[in-house]
Length: 269
Image (cartoon, rainbow, N blue to C red; front, side, top):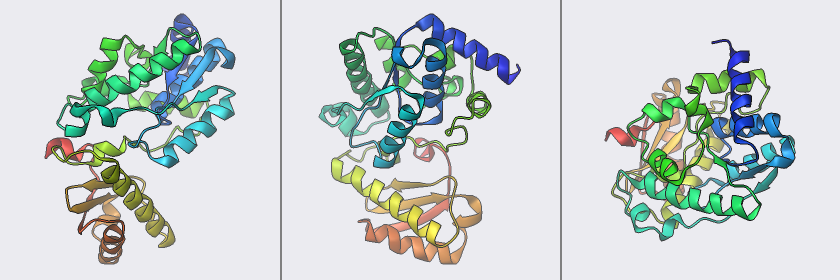
């Protein structure tokens, strides 16, 4: 289907939803839903809500605020309490379900406070086919709208429409929550999430200073070891390996590993 046609269908879908609160993480998917809602109903009928929790990197919240401001949309970042959920803290393979239940309950409450009954997320068609997305079930139980999924829009479609609309997020790499970097079974704590964020910020800074930035980057918490996952052309370079091992230890890990980036790597371990 032509990108312009896909874009038009998305706007029509959001028009059918009407005034809406968008669960806005700052990523490409929810950014497109937010932009489509503005095109469909106008900025005054749209609310961007970003869950502000220990699992959200500070840079992501800053970017979300700026993006919503550029669209002329009201933006709210309520504090959420995933860390009060035993299921989330235990960090089993259903962690995302407990997280999304907490976050979407909070976003729905904020929406109602602002007179909105509809909530939409950026879940896309690829997400729906991913067996490691228990959070989608939480959204379905709460009754949120998933316009990208409903229209069968894949990540490639999201990027194509976002580029057509000249959204700054069109080629933004995926940035899942910090908890997704922690190996299953390791307890989720504020200190553990802060260490992951601290390490990723430091690794990005080191790579930038060295003139070797990586498009895709994760620091995985394996316990006492932090595993840095990078673009393939960087992961095997000895000077990068040595430099980043020092950076990761300085961030609070006892040891360090370097590997090629693989999306959702911990789901397969």
